[in-house]
Length: 284
Image (cartoon, rainbow, N blue to C red):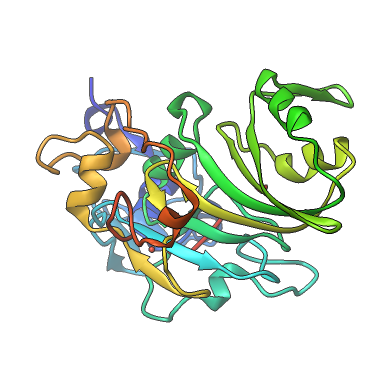
């Protein structure tokens, strides 16, 4: 039985329409501003079907927008969260005003930069973040310290740090220049600050961390601070959708992985030669 027949939580439906987050929707409900079929709600536990007439402050709820995906070149100094109690600048404050309300797929911490994927669809966000999806995150990492290539190869077996087990990591030395070195790093788990913690475990201090790819979607030549939307056809192709007609967040086909690329290929643009762009937020 489909969710349209069994119903979904009202806050989830409001969030999917792009009005606000689930938490904000729950606040609107508590304030008595949401009604279903003309009756004001007092609990976010209510489930509704596709036939329900939902209004907020008397205005009909907009129809859910099609799932979209953007690439964003996150600069250093921004945090991937909607609001920061400490008042630090956020990714979402830096996005163009014409951007719709978006969610971040994973996170990049304050001092990390590079590719951050953004979407307007919660189901698509969850799908692309799931470990079972198996999408590879690729980084260029500058570290301080002498790098032993054999030590890096050992990461392919995984590593345990202070009781935390990290999965296989593919890491190789690009070049060593004095006390600094550039590394290529690829992983699939994407745990919180995983790259930094693993490097510290090896006695290396990360001075720069740039994500250059997330699955088939690449940073390419997207300028720092800019966003670019992934064309719907490209998004459908990469998610294995037939003809681009189904909603990306609900697709079940396993996504395709790009072949490893040499360093100069990172300067090309787009997802497998195409483009993509992003607002909101797993840090690395």
